[in-house]
Image (cartoon, rainbow, N blue to C red; front, top):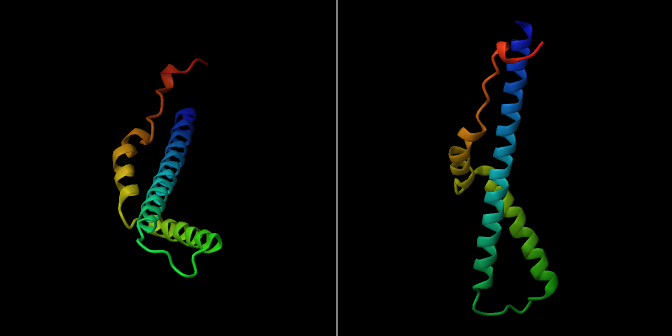
Length: 104
């Protein structure tokens, strides 16, 4: 009977790890989405500034990426939360195999 308890604990740990991986991927997806949205907003500017240069653009892109990462970690838009809700059931903790199914 100890084998079944150990298998159940291992399955639970695997499910927790899968859920953590899904949560990380969902946050990263939200960050990428926010970066793309910010980039599209920046490209819609109607005039060029006096201080516009490739260095300024690169710094602005890095600042936007950092802002997007921060917003995603807080769940500002809720995209990661929706992804977790949609795919969380598929990553649910798998049930332990019955002890009778294992060959000894």
